[in-house]
Image (tube, rainbow, N blue to C red; front, side, top):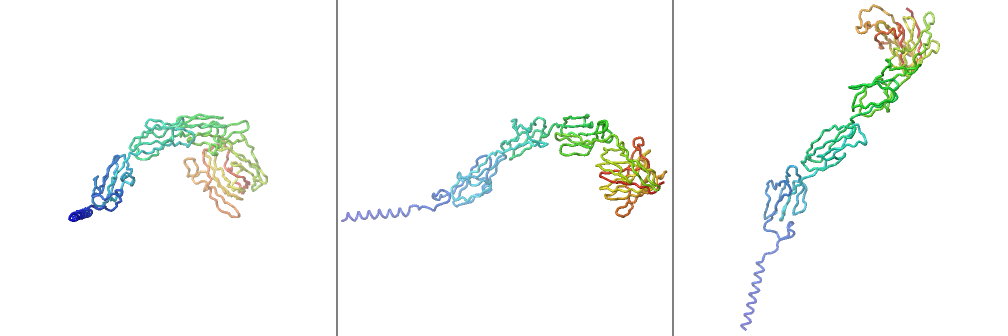
Length: 469
């Protein structure tokens, strides 16, 4: 009996010891975001590492090891060294952010790594041609290696590139050798221009003198000249008269009136051109008869009608005569053409009435003097039917003289008076067509009182001498 009590006492002591052991044993803690569900450590530890060349500030300091018994924040700033770039933050080996500034809330043990890299940039090199062209094969040496252009090359940050342009045949490079430090992606333009250009002359009928700085030549027929790019050339008729006319055959002159470049014509006889491209030039030529017949018209006078001669002043013109003229009867002279100039050899008069019917303006000038100087005065009519009445008296011995041409000052205002009549309206007309120059009585017969008519359209003109001297 006593033995049974002893066994029961031992069992009770064992049960009590087991209960005390369970009460004193440590209990499992709550789950944390960092640590993969493991038990909360006594210390939360964050370590900061650097890969590449750069530094990190954490909470404003360079401290690389952080620990705390409570969650805490890290304010991070990545600072790459020169020529390096920040790539990103790794937290426990996983990419957290690619921005250099980041904030982490640390709740468990972590390792933060700032990754820096030496970046490689793209450098684009393209050619630019002047003038723009297709098929020109420019190239460039980049650090000694020849590349056809355009080309894209790669270069690490802060590396030095030496780019030397190589011009294709017939071109020249406008850039010298470029030395570049690569701090980012670059686009480099290399400029090339034509070294020489060709001027092509076709169908040169009137011989032409081509002049440029340092040289000149005379051309006829078909010819070409190779000249440096951007050369300025001057073209002028050679062996031609002041109209740009040279003998063509027994009956006609060939007169240079302009030039054509294939896209259009310019009516300039002596152009100055700058050659930036291969240029084809062809003369614009008009043919003029060597002689024109004199036309006689009837002019009414207070005592009857008289005949007056009309003819183009060929020797005195500075352009080719491009017109027709004839007498239509009843005193009317008919003139037509793109450009015509006629002289009318009137008998002496003091008051003259001129009737003009035209689709444009007709210039009417009275020749006042031809020796020792030439001087004329007149005005332009208006389109439609106009009457110009001229009351004029030649006065010798004027005291005020224009020193250059020996022309009396304001002579045409004092001694050339006219009235303009249109649609029954009469008004005084101011003289504004003035011609001056050296007299040429041996070449251009012109007497005081003769008329000079200039037109660019068809016209009918009639003259009446209202009062004779």
